Length: 223
Image (cartoon, rainbow, N blue to C red; front, side, top):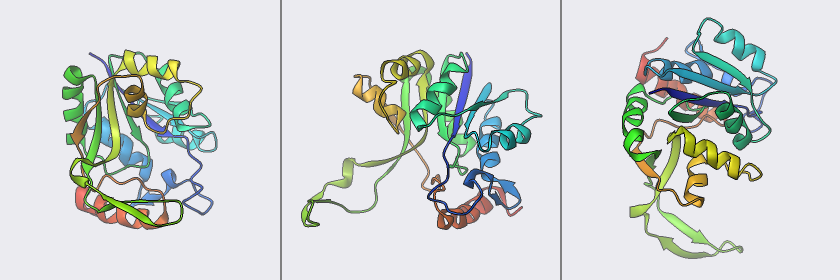
């Protein structure tokens, strides 16, 4: 069986601020994107496809030029389009789709996904919601407190049987989903959860970068 990881790196980092794409920011001397990709390399994945923003595609290609199983393609204008381009750039049995800006993903979670997706066909890594959730109307008035016992926060990777997620992207290519599992939910497929790690945050702002430095230091030791 062949496993491919699709790493989305097509964003513009508009919410991050500054002139540097957040994926090229260094923590303990290593780029955010490199931590992300190395977690998959350390999981014995067969192939990695990075869908990169055109403004950083040369940087990313140079970063991984010595890795024969890493392919860099140009991402799309939306996350969904970037993932579709990644799916078109590979042919495999199972695919794991992951945000490039989640460098704290662990090889252990990846390896478990690779095993479980064979039986379950569609899995999303998630963490149980710990905050109290309120439903609020358009005027800012609290309507009710929602029972959080069955609520989860979605992370990535999400793992799929390749043929069903590729078909979903072809069927819904004119939509704008930000969550690949949501596409299969819409089409009536069963999607299961795998327990994630609360440290597996997405680096969106500079404060997230500071937190990532702490977490990566814990996971890999200060570089």
